[in-house]
Length: 111
Image 1: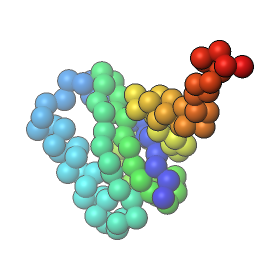
Image 2: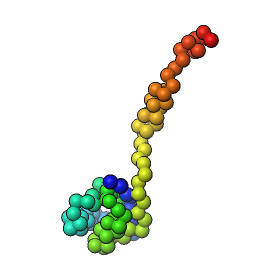
Image 3: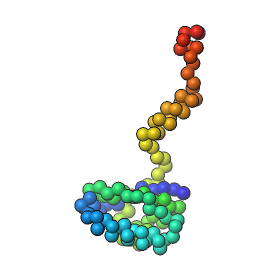
Image 4: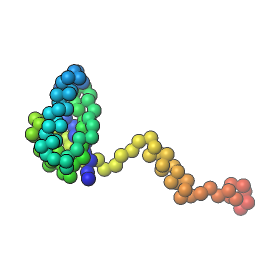
């Protein structure tokens, strides 16, 4: 199922208290329960004036419906096409090494 990043502009988001963040979370969870299990909130990142949310959903339309029902902004919704992290380089390196094993004879100057 597709995974999305949602960009929500919320001036002062980074200054919200734990109680205010809990209220936002509860509202989101309430709307998600009404939509059923096809839309899943994975996590969110709060910055100064924005919140970036990660969702799993069958369509962008369901994410927009969640935003509408919850009264949340959703200026940008982007489908995640791939994920990378520091281990991506390691796995690529080991795959490359596996695809082309070292030629010890050549390295030893045999030919």
